View (tube, rainbow, N blue to C red):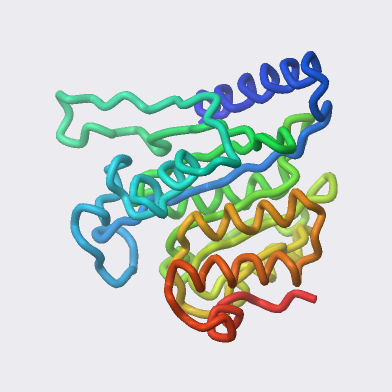
Length: 257
């Protein structure tokens, strides 16, 4: 795990130095996103097309490589710039070419308007339990490079496995969280409360966690908007993507105020 962590930390320090030189925000917000790739075989999901439900396929995965996946969506966005990408190397001689690998790719993005830094990790679909632990560990992470907001995108793994964490490991500073998976409030709110993390966007229903929702929510969060406004941004983004009414879309997301 430490090898994967080194890349985003170095990248953030380099970006921070460059921002200071150019007169940009000297203390940009830091965001960390965990994406567990959609996986028909290893997750308790309603199966999707095999090509987009392969938890080892970055290029085509529903939550990473498809048009609404994190990589594709942010790549097409005018608001974000990709600064760095590091992919794991497969072992072609092994029966499992990704043996021993949990994170297939780590990307670092910069928000063009505010200089905020976003680190995104694409986890193998079969590693969803480890990815969920990683998300919770980041909620209480310490240090200068620790995130201001942590997000989780994908299937709600807590529907599939029992989860243990340390409720005494409080967030060392004010920290926010976004959880984009089905019924996330019912499954994650107790964890967030125990760790003294403020939920910014949670869900009430079964839903589609496309990264257009994360993008919309982060725009509001970076503007300093309240949670009601962020919820409204997410709902309007959901309307555009799912072609449903605004009332129905608002019902997907929790009223946190």
